[in-house]
Length: 142
Ligand SMILES: CC(C)(COP(=O)(O)OP(=O)(O)OC[C@H]1O[C@@H](n2cnc3c(N)ncnc32)[C@H](O)[C@@H]1OP(=O)(O)O)[C@@H](O)C(=O)NCCC(=O)NCCS
Image 1 (tube, protein in one colour):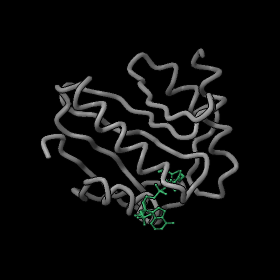
Image 2 (cartoon, protein in one colour; image 1 turned 90 degrees about the vertical axis):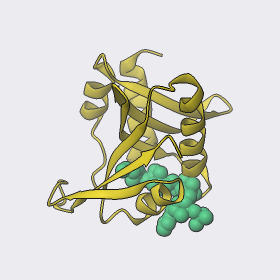
Image 3 (spheres, rainbow, N blue to C red; image 1 turned 120 degrees about the horizontal axis):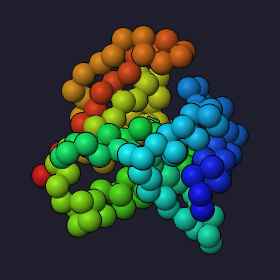
Image 4 (tube, helix red, strand yellow; image 1 turned 45 degrees about the vertical axis):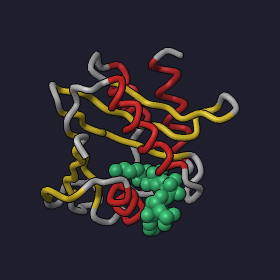
């Protein structure tokens, strides 16, 4: 699948959500066309059910975005656990995962805590809806 087609599929997966601060189609296209852009997909019956967009710089991995097609069915947790376990074998140079999440996004915050992230900072008034971003980190060293 080329990056344009993937951008459209990921945007479609998420756009039915009522969540705030969703990525636009242009944001997906822009990110996926970038040479440093990487992604991890969970599929069921051939269709994408959940995804992570990320970049790696030296030993640091930044998760830029993630989403699931159907919320509250364990896909988010499976997605992150599968991603982390694959990283430890395929990308052992990565020592830390970093991400930003809106203070208002309780589901995502709780999910990140559950899979081992902790808060290391805060960016005030960061999102288009003016919510603060929590900066969270997870060490790959356990
Ligand atoms: C955030 C998101 C990925 C969670 O995925 P999900 O598949 O619904 O989550 P899961 O069913 O795997 O739940 C795993 C854990 O996350 C937490 N969680 C999930 N939904 C929650 C909610 N509505 N309220 C509080 N905690 C929640 C819980 O700790 C849950 O564990 P539990 O079931 O033992 O209570 C999903 O809501 C989503 O795609 N949101 C839109 C995009 C988004 O906000 N991405 C994050 C950008 S930073």
